[in-house]
Image 1: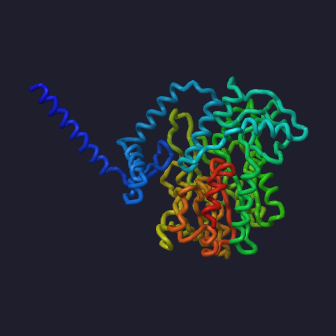
Image 2: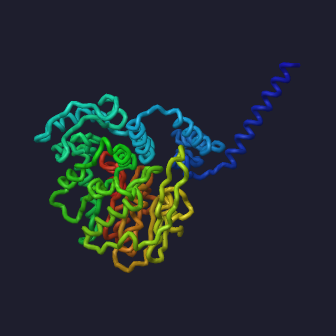
Image 3: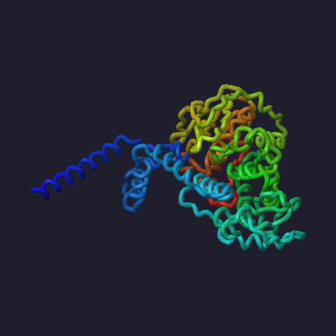
Length: 462
């Protein structure tokens, strides 16, 4: 009798769990949505087709759906992260390196391999090859060895001295200037990849009218800027020789302009106005404006002062430790706009330009919208622009609106652009919509070291 009772209880318990699981699955959000705690898109309920069933795509996505949609997920994740932060024994350098790695992982497309193998040897060879540069045998900040630092964030060798530009025939670098007069390598960029990207830009230019221009910039992650901000006793500046190498690869090509966000923002990084957020991995509206203004100057356009716009100051939510907040200054457009998102080939749905109710970076441009976005600006300038970007383009794009009668947006990351959904390649869409100028705004997480820029942009373009 006792065993029979135990069996009955077990059966009813399994049945209750099954019913509860089915109920939660049926009532959960079937569409992919943003996790506020993890700042990423959660898996929606997968579509069941013969193809997805037999290639295991359905089961893989279904497992991810169950994992991403358990009850009170964001609350559990936030509580766990806060608890782990409270017991952390990492140094400041370790924390910043970890944040950078996490941010890169979030911003890259899933399953893309993060590069970095062989960086130590490449940097050592490059340092020896730079005329007048001594290779200094020294470990980075903290007690970590060079090898450990490379594993954490590809950092390590001091590759030059302040005042010298670290670049060789084969490599260029992102780096920090240290208060001891040396430079600390942050990332290494290979010339062959930058040359491939230059070829992609030339192909893109072929789709533009004779007077069309391409403006490119690569934006560092907030953790990379904040490392300098937080450790001013150790760092006094930063730099990039990547743009120099790209310009060299573009030599002889007109109307393709390369802008170094590192150089443009360096005078402002430790100032009173933040150029990057502390609770988020993006740049601020102010930082994006300064870079956009430099582009407008280069193109001979009158620069509209930052203060001429009206803004809503949106205060970010509490951080895990509650020590600080960010202010997202989200502008109101100078002219009435129509903001449209393509839902299928040539089918557009109107949405709000901004989300003034959000308390996150996703308030800018009302978040990234796929696969294609079109903003009719009300400015009768006779020109149209396309912004090819990851999420860093969302803070940048609003400042283009007064200069173009239409501004289009597309995300070039793997899986974010669909030729079938849009109706053609990016090149074909440039011609279809009469695009005059292209702005490429990408974070370093999707920049000139990454397949999203080197491989997928070319794939989507043609």
